[in-house]
Amino acid sequence: MKTDPESFIRANTGILSPPHVPEIRLHLASEAHDLWLKTEEELEAIGLPPPFWAFAWAGGQGLARYVLDHPEVVRGRRVVDFASGSGLVAIAAMLAGAAEVLAVDIDPWAETAVRLNADLNGVEVKFLGEDIIGRECEADVYLAGDVFYDKGFADLLQPWFETLGSAGAAVLVGDPGRAYCPRERLAALATYEVPVTRALEDSEVKRTTVWRFGADNIDNR
Image (cartoon, rainbow, N blue to C red):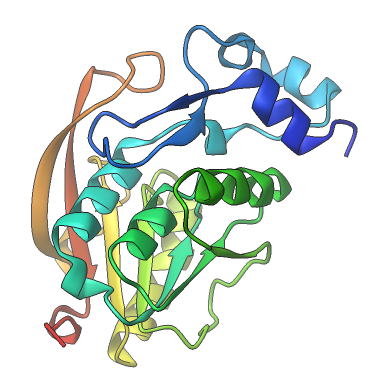
C-alpha cells in the first residue's frame, strides 16, 4: 500500500454515530472531511480503493438496527458479516451477543477500518480478506448489508445465499431498494426509514428492508 491505512483513516474521518444506529460509533467521513471530496483519480494516486468503509450505508444501518433490536437472531451463534465495509453490522452482532463474528471484505483497507471501529465499541471482530462467495464458513448466521447494487454481483450472491439457507444457516440481507434485490425470493422481516446523505444516495431517507433467505431457518434458540 502507498499509504498507511490506520494513519489515513484517523486523519480523514471523524468518530460519528450512524443516525439509525446511535449506539455504535464509527470512523466515518462526512462532508467536513477531505476524503468525501476526493475523486477516483485522487484516491488511486494514494493507493486507496473506493472507500466504502468510510460511510454507513442504508442497508447496513437497517440490518444493524434489526440485529440490535432482535438479538435472538445472533445470540450465542457464529456470525459472518459479508462485505463488511466499516464493520457496522459485525459490531452490532457482537453487541447483540453473538458468540463470534467474522467480518469478510476483499478491500484490504476494510481490515483496518473494522479493527479500529471494533475497538471504539469495545468488541472483538475477526477479519477475513478473501472472496468467500460459494463457500461455507462454519457459521450459523450470514449478514449482508446493501449488496444487490450490481447485477453481476447479485447473480453470484443469490444462489450462494439460497444454498446457505437450504443448508440451515440464517441469511439476512439489508436492502434500501436496490434494483437487483431478488425480493420475490425473500421474506421481509422489518422495514425502516433510514436517514442518509444525499451526496451518497438519491434522497435523504432510504426505505430499507431487512430480508431473509431460507425463511424457516431463524428461530428463537
